[in-house]
Image (cartoon, rainbow, N blue to C red; front, side, top):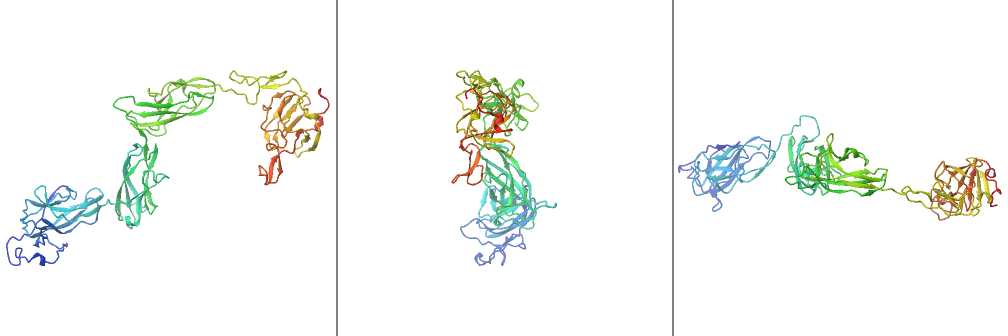
Length: 586
């Protein structure tokens, strides 16, 4: 409330002995002390310091150092008239110093009577604390007329106005009340600010000198907004609230960041956390006065991909419309007929986007499985609505044909090319060059010397043949592949001999030389199944070797086969499946 206050003063205007004009020399007066019992009066002679000021401040009774908003307090001020002229009540008054206007509910305290030169005025009046919590200066000075301020003003006293805390409900000592969060959208590295209000519902003050502070807790990175803690602006007495202003800076990287704080003492969190708000950092864009609501600023799309290839494409979009792009907005195929062609029907935006900001949208795509040229175009749409007309550019992405030969060495590569051709009398059978029958140039291992034979624990006859390492191992008869893979003994294909009807395994073949790989396929006689292993690291058996590091075995062991040989496993005795001496080359 803006009001003017008049104070009754006792003024001594006659030169009576022992009275005002007959007062003793000021230098002989005792020091002045303003107390609650001091009356509102022109109180004796002034104690003017020559040449110092026209209005010399002598004392005051200030409001309490802490007040609640709207609280009232009776105060007093004492000034000496050292101006050389009387202060007329219609001209001279006391007003708040430093343009504080009516911050304390009073704009002017008038003098109701004349104050002669060399006399002291004591004024009692009532002030009302500001409505908003904060720290306010209590400082007054004598004024003449409208603008002339007479020095010296009263000594400045900073009064803390605290909001009263509602602590009626049970809860922690420190409670979060409310906040003014920063604006949701900002550019990288710019200044932002907010305010948080906490209440002290405990029994002890939260003193700044005791290490109480506001601490950032919204992210594992405690320096996310350029500061991790902030000292309280003032002590917080029990039953009161404190308002803390936070001046911060947004991170340099685009993203959504949590704005959340908590009071702490020496780093140890206390009581309730503030509500978590979000500050979204995006690159700004100048939309101008006119234009489409969606601006496509750039794209990154591969021109050629493989069938079924997964790849990331990017589109840079700016929001120049009135709608906020929130969780309901996404990129969709611009034409309904092409929806889902690239492995997805909806590409969510990574962040919310307000007008005047841009976003990088990543499209995690999967190419169609058939080689062809496909259209590529996306548009922004809100769920349940048609896409906006401002789509990305019309493009074509070619899904190329990828030649595939695998272990084949002849025949079609699937893209109109060839995996190779066969020489001599060999023919291409299932992608492999196969000689017609057995070749006398191949080692007929079934005629080799048997080095060792026994029955394994799994019930198979295990026969070791004296076959050198690096020897191509061929089939004696047409045989069907029943099982294949690289196991503890190297590459171990398992067949059924279609002439004898017997099953057999070839053991100690090199894992990197697997030529019979299609289970269920019949491979002809003379077909090279693989290469014998011998003493190599890539096949078979754990043998202790001094100084050798362990590989899938115990300490001091290495992975080797058991020698330069070929092992054949059969269900029935070996010579029942592979009798010797009956082939044309023998």
